[in-house]
Image (tube, rainbow, N blue to C red; front, side, top):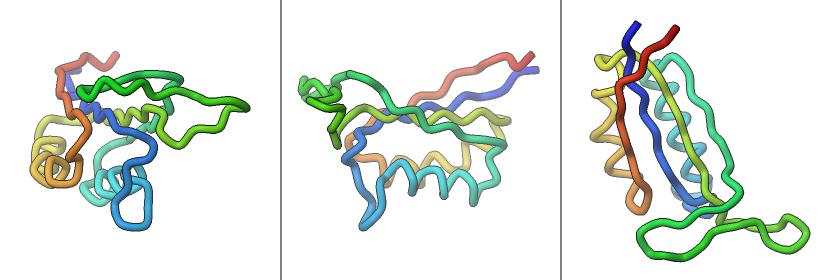
Length: 101
């Protein structure tokens, strides 16, 4: 069965007002009734600015990479893209067709 995978790459320090941006995005996806979403915290990474984000001494860091993944029908994913692009200013949003088995 063909589905669309939405992947959003953020920084753990990205915020929407008082809450982490990844939490805001997950709540938006829930409001649009996307089938399911997973937030994964990365160990290390960098983006277009070339700054390496990684876990620091004693595991403390507030800028590690965060990846949000959601998979659903294209008809459910596409309507939320405009809203997501308005709030994900420094991150990266990708779409790809996947096969769910």
